Image (tube, rainbow, N blue to C red; front, side, top):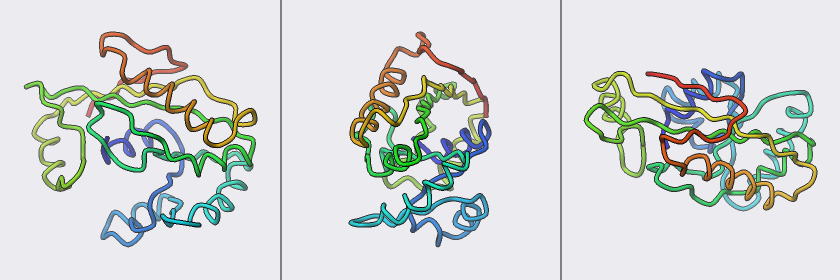
Length: 185
């Protein structure tokens, strides 16, 4: 939903992220992402295989990797289809996929201020969040999915299904989780 997703996951886990290669050249953000060990994906035809070649030994060595398979941010009202190419790294390294779902609360006035989508301006989004302290987020660790039994499309679909089920459940109903954390900004 937002750049906040990265901050939340990084506050919960020691992990490296996958980002589009353009981020590497963004002022400040690119330097921070590179310093954090981000893996960069050159989008388009043929861009995933060189990255998977980097990811497999990293994962086989016990590394933790976070990717956002929708490939974009949303308002959180639905879960977009997942891009499956990078799921090949889990299969080739024989590492399970740990689905994680994030659900943000609303501002005190009932507005959904967490999303950062479309033509939103980062500075404006940050100011809005600072004007509304106490935004809560639920981070749901859903049951891990073994990578060995599925091909990448099946693994992506299975991951999307459990995340969608968790996120689309009413906010009053907590999904079945291995571990849930509530964080307040």
